[in-house]
Length: 193
Image 1: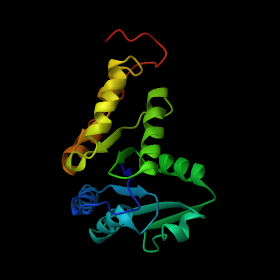
Image 2: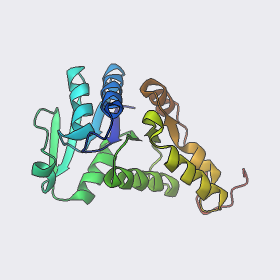
Image 3: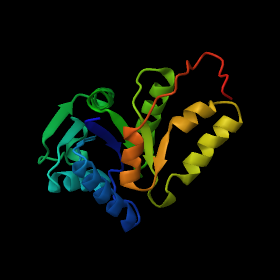
Image 4: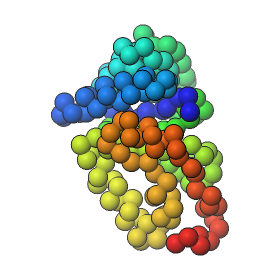
């Protein structure tokens, strides 16, 4: 594992704990020698985690659509900044550059990006780990909803179990390092359940 894609808010959130977690995760990435791949903005949690990695001497690769360079105030101090034509190319490039995916707290855009790579993993488009950094129980309602989808027969328990979840950056990175993708074909019967 060389690079981790982090999805997070372009806003700082309502409480300081989110920015603290972004700084801690950025430090943990740099300490582990892992590059950050992210959305290229310098505002909100996006800017906080990028600055934390840079301040710790790490590499940061941003990918931002041209339309959002001004709105998200593209970060000009990164190791690399790729300006792409649209969101589809942004997400594809971020996925191609990363060896793992982590969602930190954020809004609809963060959730959309998380669910896309999580779905891709289930369909076999990639075999990379997908994770939630569950800062101060932020993702507890989503985790409960995902368990509910399993209980109601809309997702296999194996795919829920494949999701890496932790509140602590170092523990989450350890999960990512030791990740083993499920050996299931989404369309084949699951004999483990």
